[in-house]
Amino acid sequence: MFRSDSDDYRHIFLNDIPLIDVRAPVEFSQGAFTHATNLPLMSDNERESVGICYKQRGQQEAIELGERLVSGDVKRQRIERWIAFCQQHSDGFLYCFRGGLRSHIAQRWLSEAGVDYPLIEGGYKALRNFLIAENCRSATMPMRIIGGNTGSGKTLMVRELPFGVDLEGAARHRGSSFGRTIAGQSTQINFENRLAVDLLKKRHAGVCHWVIEDEGKAIGANHVPLEIYDGMQRAGIVVIDDPLDIRLGRLQLEYIDSMSADFERAYGAEYGWVQFSEYLHHGLFAIRKRLGMERYQVVLNELDLALEYHQSGKGSSKHENWLVPLLNEYYDPMYNYQLGKKSERIIFRGDYAAVREFLLHDALSHNVLVQDKA
Image (cartoon, rainbow, N blue to C red; front, side, top):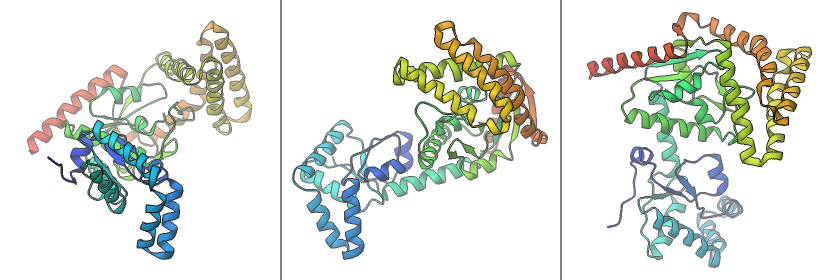
């Protein structure tokens, strides 16, 4: 039986329903969904030509131009790709920007080829607006903020807790000058989309309050949605106070050992090392003015010596020689100053285990309150 077109956006995102996005590649690159595949009706150049024709000569001539551009073997190949997707994902849908002409053309061509495949009513724009509204809804829920100096394990704890909101994971950036990841950041829209789907799924699973890492307005090139950021500024803060040696161990694993291995897997041993070295140098260079040029040169020298020792196969332990002064003279003073301005919002301090235990008990109290309201 033929499935009807859908406007059940909640179901689509909760279940990662496969989607055919028939927009042009440039539109897809600007904003899309993780469970969508770009199988465009028109290429970027074709879309541009049709758009110019529409403005100059009207819709009918634009449609006729589009049919001439996408005809013969080009049309056949595109339909074949759609059919292959439909056969592999019988539960999916297709969409264009507004659920208008392009998606209806794709749906009609598929039907003429013997495949009935439903579309998303309202298209990409409706799906996107749904996720924007979801971020606004999520921002109204109670929040706790995890604070602590660099290396305290804030991100680790957020990812461990079922009610944690991993902003850095959604942004694909660790929120510092050394925050780059191998995957790289995507557009602001894709960051917001990923975050909204994650929050929607957690709320659907019964989460009724959030724990979020203490972040600024920006995480790399991405900006935390304003509604969520504003909620963060009113939330109580719990602070992880772990000793320096434990923090160093976490930083060594995350920024040195794991990143060097990631670069090697991505680029091979030789070029991967070049990329890893450039990553560390770029991170340090980005904060040179705040360090002061004299101190920057000292830390840079220790970084170069550590890289030379590391590359020789003797291990990564020498990286402590530049990490320790960087923490003591830059990151810790900067964060302590920022935290001091929010001191009235601190509700608990302790080591990693104590903070985790506090947050778990705190979550139970939120659940009780919600159940009582119900």
